[in-house]
Image 1 (cartoon, each protein chain N blue to C red):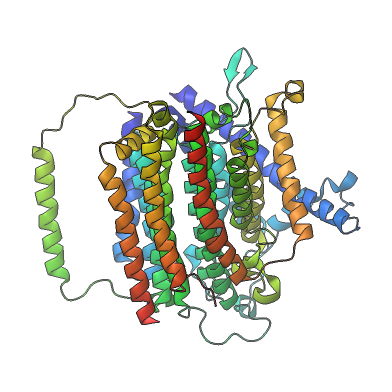
Image 2 (cartoon, each protein chain N blue to C red; image 1 turned 180 degrees about the horizontal axis):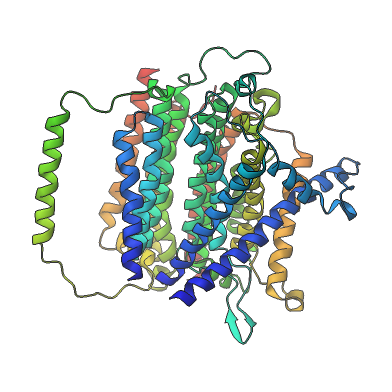
Length: 123
Length: 336
Length: 163
């Protein structure tokens, strides 16, 4: 079983090398003709003003937060989904279904709450 | 041990070379197809049918000057496109391309690693891919880049949930997280034909897949009319190309995943399934998926950002949750 | 042998970025360094053949929590990339406490008699986790959804007040 992960690790390393290789080739081959104006930040041709790193809307944070919670829900459903058929075979299908139903309904209430409070509006 | 390492190395290099070539030719395929959709010719000058065009493009990008804008955060600026490309490549470690084949008297499985949590590896990798975009947009210190990357990351995380819920329906049906076993479970009936929950899960997966790859009609990060080029604005030369390789490879990835999870993997359609070997069916299905992506781009206009978020959170997420429950109910009732 | 080498590599991958997290003067770089650190921990879980925990580690920590942290940093002044000091005048006291804690933990680790008898691995540990969720630990499974609900409501209330 660990053997398969060795393959995954080797693949990852080779992938990283394949991504780095062209950058090295570029470093060797590409011309260099640098001057200050070229390095200016692109702002549709006008001289850039102010800072790009401004504080931005809190909505992004709200969505990220709701995302974290539902991500946890989704990953908790995976082990349930894997064993569900096994439990059906043991005549426990109804019981196990109700457990997942409770889990999803409780979090569904969270979604409804966020919805009603307008946290899902993007204006 | 060394023999194993060498074998893993050879397999990895072969797979990666095939993938990178396929990605390069996908750009040509897309341009030619889009041209056909719009009654143009498309690039047809470099070699017969324009077949040398990807080579010419690649060489051109290698010879482009690679300068770093003055205001950027240099480390993250270099890292971001690499993250995009490497995460896009990495998924293929667990995607099966066919049943085992006999070669030189040995049985060689056409999957690099059949780990028993394959589908989790896929989801985990796609959740890491977000960072290429967040960090690329942030490090460039450009207003368009930052705005594009924020929009894009909000889009990616929203649709990741839908993607996951589509996958959970598949796991319910297959009772396993291993990609090979998921395909085996579809020997008699592809999951897409398990009406209604399999079909709904398939549609959720495809819509989320288009959003995850930043493709039209969900290509808001690159909405050029408002954001210039989004998070890629300050990138040029091969660093820019790496973002694109990542994006185009993801198109193939989503097609390959749809093939594995819903379209029966290497199992062909009922009657004619035996006429062709498994790997040919996989490639045909992936090709169909890729064609669908291009078709979609040629057909639909881009959606607005608020429409995108509303669709993700208020339509697809509830539908996904209900669909998982529906699949569970049907499975439990059918076994009676 | 191979496992030891993998462990050492993964430990380095986990610890080096962790040092950057607490020392970098640029908050975004510090937050970003969490990601390789989380990935190293994931690798350690894989090495222990705890694949489901490894999946959680990536999807929730590296994929979701780190995004949230980056968003929070970009939402505040920290996102401007300006240099910040990560230490204050209590540097020395903090260092001493951390050092004492390290020694205490190390002593505890070395004194603990670790059981070396190998148990048998379940055929699929995701299925084992699922089985445990649905039978012995059903209460924990259901309560976790309540905890998530409460944290969601709480976060929304706080966020809306600040708007």
